[in-house]
Length: 98
Image (cartoon, rainbow, N blue to C red):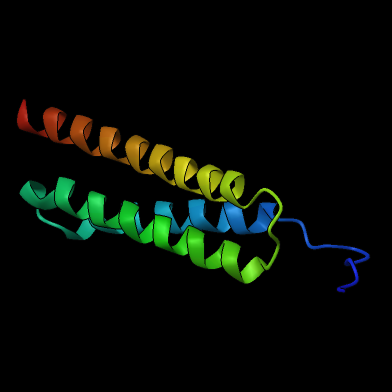
């Protein structure tokens, strides 16, 4: 029999870490990848974020609400990358109209 943890770690830090990772990778893709490849690299950034979410939540070591934590991490990464993608698309439209 295992004893429960007296003060378990809060999972919110791991969730936010995935969001920050997605933001950093999304900005790097926007700055350093040629325009025709943005969609492909944003998809790879999302895949890396989902894998990172699994790794962080597995390292957290708690079974309770595992699916919810991974889903929240992945959904947040999707939203962050979506906002960055929209910003990149709008900036390329504005730059193309000049």
